Structure formats: C-alpha cells, structure tokens
Length: 311
Image (tube, rainbow, N blue to C red; front, side, top):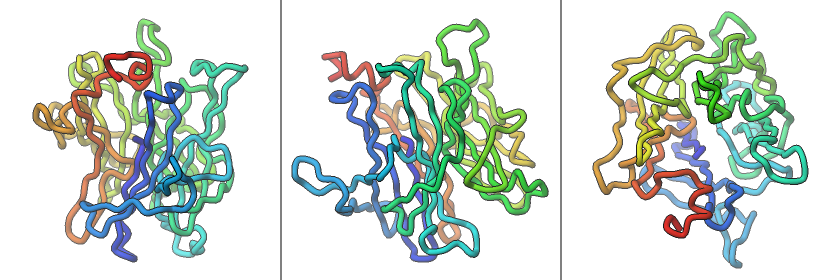
C-alpha cells in the first residue's frame, strides 16, 4: 500500500495502481509503483508498460520524469469538460531529507498533482499540498470531488492519515488519526481548520491509518482501517463511519468490523488496509478492494532488512 482500484463505466475496465517495496534489499524504503488491469475486478493482468526493465525483462512499473517517491492515490477526473490528457489525476508523494544522510526525523514531505490520459504516462502539474515535516504532514490517500458543497473551498476534500502527539510525548511522530484537507481546486488543498475528522477510540483501536470516503445521497460514508499495533502480531480490520458534512464522522457499530481479518493461515489473517478508493460502484453492486497481510508480516519493513530470521 498505498494502492488504488478504480472501475470506469466508460470502458467497463478496472484499473489498479499499487506500491511494491523490497524491504530486504532496500531497507531505506524505496517504493515502486505498478499498474494492472482487469475486465471483472478479479482476474488481473500486468501489462508491459515499456518504461522500466528489471533483469533485462519488461515490467509493469511506472516511471516518472520527476523525482516522485510513489503514487499516493489516483482518480478519474470528474469535471465534465476535462480534456483527454487529464482523464486520470493522481497525487504523488515527494520526499527530501535535510542534511547529507537519510534521517526520517529530518525528512520533508509534499504531494504533487499529475495528470494522465491513460493512467500509465504521467505529467506533473505542480505541488498540491505544500512541503512540511512528517508529523504535521497529512498523508493524503483519497480525493473526493463534492460539487454540491455550498462552500467552494470544500469542493475538493482530501482525506488521509495524520499524526497527533501521544499524551505522554513518547515515540514520535505520534498516533495516526484520519485528517482532512480541502480546496476549491484539486491543484491546491490546505489543512482544515480542525483537520482531525476521526480519532482512535479507547478500547477499540490504537491508531487509524488509511480511509476512503464516498458520498451516498446527502451522507458521507467512510471505510477506515482500525489498528491495534501493540498486539503481537499486529492486528487491524476495516470499519465504517458516517457523516453529514464530510468533516465530522461517527462510527457505525463501533465494535464490529465491516471486513474482518481472515482465519488463521490465510493471506489476510493479520492486518487489513483499505485502498484509496475503497468503494467502487459496479452496476448494482459495491465492490470493496483492500490489502491483506499474513501472519508472517508482523513488523515494519526496516526490521526485515536487518533480521536474518525475518529474511
């Protein structure tokens, strides 16, 4: 993760953008963005994009002509007069380090907007969410176009994970919440006056990672990741919240997951993560796409690079 699955009624095609990371060979966390397609959302193909080769073989990896770390989220342009060159939009994360060494505590992050005619070749349009340190940085993972909002500055809503300090000040950068940024244009969004729209609930979850919001009638439905990271192995499932304005959300059945983790031994027994557009309307059904982690994934990538047992 992050990753996006979109269904386009225009050509009845599913498209997937996802991130791969080789934690063993690159402990400094180098993400690579891949692309796949499907006719039914179940059976997928990874086309040769002609952009990057690996071991002299073609791949489905996307290459950008600017210094982007990975694709945070993709969306199909909802504007009725969108030109073909801007059929797909995306927020790409960019990161740089202060100083000569790569110290995550001294890293600066931003989100750039890029456009694409096909979801494969991307052109950077500019910085959409300005550079800041990791702790106050809102890791935007989904964009919602909301033309009916009476406030023009809230026509584009951007949701993602946002760190807030722990009560005792320990273990920076803190605990993740679901946060909101917004703007009149997709190319420029800023943090909401009160950016936290959903917080961890004591006794239910310890942190909230990614979320996907969809407007249904006059309401906003949020699919979010509810995590218990103090467990060994770590554990997380997908739950629901609802709101009336896109800025304040309340949980639906707080103690019950909508998508629970799988049974022991299955690929999704440990931790679930929502994709950045987690609810896709396909005919008269709603498809939920998510990531799952098996029990072998019970720590963070850096530990796999240095631990012989994990390798």
